[in-house]
Amino acid sequence: MYNKKLPMEKEIQQKSARALILQINCVVILEQQMRTKDIAYQALLNRVRDGKSTHEDCLLLRTRVIGIGLHISLNEPPWNEAPILVYRNELRTELNNRAVINKAYETGRSPTVVIATDTIKAKKHIDLPDLTKRLLALSDNKTEHLPGYLPLVPGMPVLLQENIACELSLWNGTPGIFHELIYDETREHTIGSDEGIFTADTVFVRNAQYALVEIRKSKIKKLKSLGPLIIPIPVIEKTFEVNLEKLYADKGPIMKMLNSKKLKTTINVKRKGLPLVPAYSITTHKSQGQTLPRIVIDLNMPPGMVEVASAYVPLSRVQQLTDLVILQDFSINALQVKPSKGQIAELNRLAIIFKQTKQRYAHYFV
Image (cartoon, rainbow, N blue to C red; front, side, top):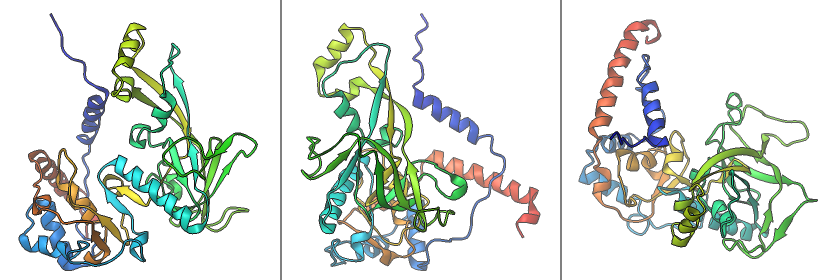
């Protein structure tokens, strides 16, 4: 009997992406270092990228570990404004929530939390306990990057989570400073809701329309009636899939009830929310491609697969070693992860295409 297991959606997407990449026949490899200005630090980064870090590299980085080679406070300038780079979305969310509350306390304001609006798309009505709260509590990397709870306070750093207008430099990952939330004041909003994660004076808004964000990289310099570089970021809609079995992993009887009613264990959710997240803490994945003035990192990797990028990406976001602070001591093993055979093979394949590209377009490589 033919019983081949059908591929999962993620596997299909990965194979499709790989097929598209293999069709690329023109490659340009950037050979000049444009970010790192510290020559000794650049040499260290090159060794980390190849998994060949030395004991001397480890000693050099330890000069930036708080309490060992460095005696500073993260509560004082300039480090109180440096983003903390982390590996897990859940930790990033928790750090950002606390930072927003602290910012509100410092400025004498009440934090505002925008609550996303979720609509469940299902043929049969699904009546599950706490379903709304469980959906809102999902990490935004599982909800098409629209957070269920978005804490805001004027003056805080944020990141765009959507390609709003790439031609105007308003794309996913663009940093900005939040200024003001525009919402329908005639509709429901509450103070001191029972959401549990925020302070009692928090204002919860369920009818946001758009946020005014200062985006210095934007090509829009001035809009009528708004201040310089202030861009309105509107509420958007996204649809994502949720596995109820995972959502209620702590509630065994729930799944028995679903099975007894012959309900599907996956649902589609349409979410309406602001495509923004606080940027006091950023995942290392989200930081790729950015040059940051200062950063705080931790080189102790979470359980799971550790890759070359796990250490190289956070370490290489700054221009020099003195722009970096490390939270705690670490093992040299974190710096000696070698590229996999697959990664090496892919780099060699791209190098061959690069050589062919230079021959084909020699007049551009003068």
